[in-house]
Image (cartoon, rainbow, N blue to C red; front, side, top):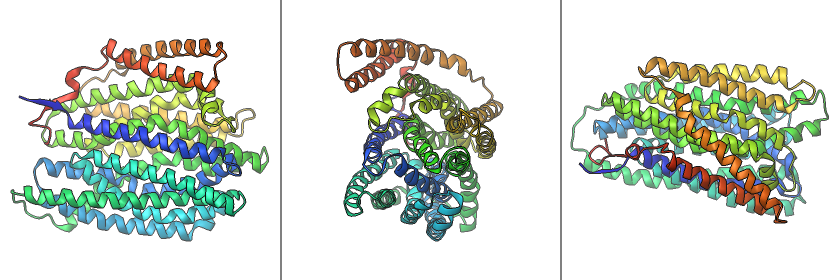
Length: 525
């Protein structure tokens, strides 16, 4: 029987490649605005506070949708029920278009109240208003991405994400540059126009996805040889809501951590330091630290995104052995990403800030502390994808809710402590991630009858990461003594670390060849 690279691996590779490119372009515009005269940490505070509120409403209206739709579509595709696949898609578009429109209008009309009362950053009002149309665009985009993922065409989602980021980067730089000249470097105006670039980019991504959906639909019409009775619209609505609501709630709760910071950090810090200093400290947290911390999460999300339709497909065919192998492989991949990311960011926090933010280097110690929570966040992300693929949608909701409670309590009690301040918000993130991980890990072991030995799976990635960072730091120190540019020393030592780790993966045989392949006969199941 012929074997080829599995659709699961193809999906992960396409999303990871997309995320690498997205982060490169994201770093370009982030570095640009952070170092832009008149923008800096204060501009980032305005920009990110508005963006985080938008992200919360976006989560409510769209974030849980791709995973929910991909799960439904994957199950129907395994039965070759193309008629009801199309009906499900159309109903989902109708439902979430309405939800997205409500979210759009709500954000636009409440922008003043949110910026003045909730955020206590009045300058964020315009940013919130220009972001509001993006909620409607992304609600529709999310349904189409879910459809593509369920069709095992995750590369379309990956490409649409890249197009969106590319357009966002281009328009952000152009718009901010133009407005800075027109407004004489007005920080509020530049922050607003930077957010407007997001709205334009989401619209362009939507146009691309609509064209792709039409081509897939036409192909399915030709393949639709089997007759299935049409499901009632009310049945489809219940099915979509039953899956999407828990996933959306889980995603909302998961994203609340940053919104909790946007609401509490400035508010609490103003009791102990000036308002300007409080805003700047929040700007460091919400922009510079978050930009770097989101990198390993964005790479790992490829695994959780690909897992949901894959586990759903195997469950629909009662392939328990396949499910267990997929779970172990996915957790291993997550550890291979999370452990070296933790070591690297912890060891190179100061150098990373010097490289990315040469004109605004404050905050590297916060990044070092934040790196300690990476492994818990990534494992929680992966296990959530497994549980959702298995239909255990409520468990991620419970774990995320408890994590949010821990985050709120931590911020309230830790931020006011003299000498900690903004570090309290990061400690809250670490505690929240740890508690959420413990809950989902115990639940997974309870629902799947096999032992997941994370410590055993972690051994090779841990030792390889340890040797990687020791070797890399020695190279950095040697280069630093050669009177070579510090930027060059940083880049070379980080690249050497990556190469060294990749070699360790092959030498230690962390991954087996058979884990990457499946029979071509089953690749479309």
